[in-house]
Amino acid sequence: MKRYISWLAIACMTAAAGLAQAGEPPAGIPEGMGALPSTVPVPADNPMSAAKTELGKQLYLDPVLSKSGHISCNSCHNLGTWGVDNQARSIGHKWQRGGRNAPTSFNAAFWSAQFWDGRAPQLEDQAKGPPMNPVEMADDSEEQLITRLQAAGYTPLFEQVFGKNSLNFDNMAKAIGAFERTLITPDAPFDLYVRGEGDISAAAKRGMRKVADIGCTACHSGPLFTNNTFQQFNYGSDDGRKSVTGNADDDHYFRVQSWRNVAMTAPYFHDGAVKTLPEAVRIMAKVQLDTILSDADVVDIVAFLETLTGTPPQVTYPVFPRPAGHALNWQD
Ligand code: HEC
Ligand code: HEC
Image 1: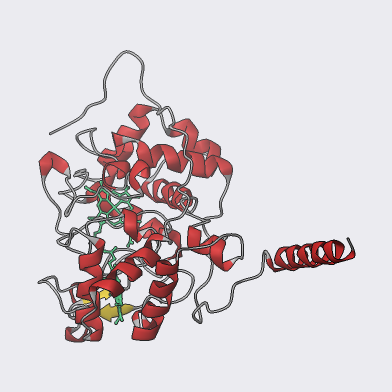
Image 2: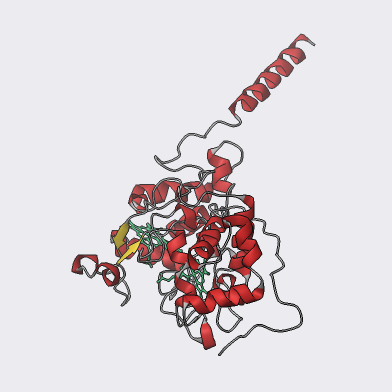
């Protein structure tokens, strides 16, 4: 009996020790890796409010932003498919294809600059691009778009957020930017693992160490798995950042893409030409690190990348303002 009790006591002590460890980060996580931050940077001139993000949600989802009345931000950055359209190159106005793959709108609030080539400093600048882009929403002018938003009935919604006479292009972009700052994907299996709240597979752990050992994390670093810089990627025919700066030194430079949710945002790279994640991993290793990965390493790295799929934002589909009894003046 005595012996039985002592074993029981040891079992209890072991269980208690196990509990004490829960919530502590496990050993062996490569330097810099961590959980997705829970707060996003917010610019001083566009503070967040519930009414603003609600308006931004309507504008993001409403095809009223497009000349045809058919294309919304959500057409290419679908909230139900991880903020992308899974097309190599997106379909816009009159079925035209754009020149690049649509990156996800999820977590975009964390990037140092928007677009593959970083030509928009922040979300508010970015949101002004698609409405005027002839292969995206194809509006003829800001005035045309603002007139349509007024006709749809958006005036009181803007005034509630921004005050009198506030339905304008800048405030449209501010509302959309504020909404996008809510599109964050926390609690990926990797995040739970680093917080000591869950585990990832042995293959994923090998992949985690591998990407650090071979140097992927020189660029895909920190909790965002991007160092938010522009780096040369000698692949394809797109000039990248050179087309923005005009500087020959920026030829084929692109913003380092985050690995957050990357398993859900195929196809890959700025031209969307690579259909699978294993293939993207092989190409990156070859082009950026002059390394040929073994099949086993690719499997492990992909298993690790899959642990970076977070929890998508839960978005309630809104009702858009519309005039009663007649359609808006859509155009071809
Ligand atoms: C017709 C498809 C299409 C529509 C409509 C569209 N986008 Fe995009 N979006 C893209 C493509 C393609 C890119 C990448 C273009 C580039 O880098 O040159 C992009 C880039 C972005 C980025 C940058 C993300 C990053 O990682 O750099 C954000 C944010 C974004 N769009 C938000 C929006 C918002 C908000 C709207 C609506 C106002 C919108 N998009 C409408 C296709 C579209
Ligand atoms: C020198 C910096 C650098 C290194 C090192 C690097 N990458 Fe990248 N990575 C980039 C850049 C830049 C992009 C954006 C490429 C583009 O514009 O198409 C990218 C894109 C990717 C993508 C595609 C993301 C998407 O959404 O299309 C994956 C996957 C990826 N990298 C994985 C890796 C892996 C795995 C390694 C190590 C084997 C690695 N990278 C090493 C800079 C780097």
